[in-house]
Image 1 (tube, rainbow, N blue to C red):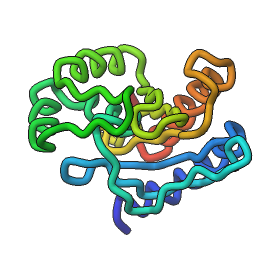
Image 2 (tube, helix red, strand yellow):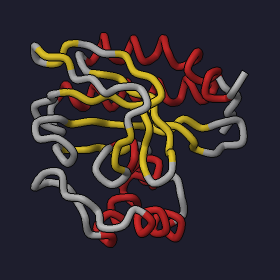
Image 3 (tube, rainbow, N blue to C red):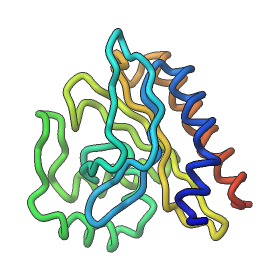
Length: 180
């Protein structure tokens, strides 16, 4: 059985619980090339609409919480190489950070917090939070998160989503053998 398939089986109940408790879409992602690929999701109605991403969809590293989280798991040199390999960073909204030095500063904050936030950088009106899933060796190869129409990143509902996402990431990490 492949590692991704096993992880999907372990993560599925947590994705469903995240979606149900946040009224957002919960995503499981990993890096593929110079992008993030969604490998599983569970959807919930967000403000009267569904926010969904097709399994296998490639998302930008620099404009999503999943991508920024996975970049933060790398050294600054590796993150710079990934960002440079992506070529000109696309601005998806007026909030998208496209300057490499600004992104690298944010990666330091993500490392300190233990989670990443996206605040309308990929799609106007959507906000997301992602946390790392550590494998048995302690490496961060996957991110779990939720994306939805949260009013703002300082709202009680978003802070609640941060706590739930971080707890799910920690529980999944331990379930697949991480002991850090």
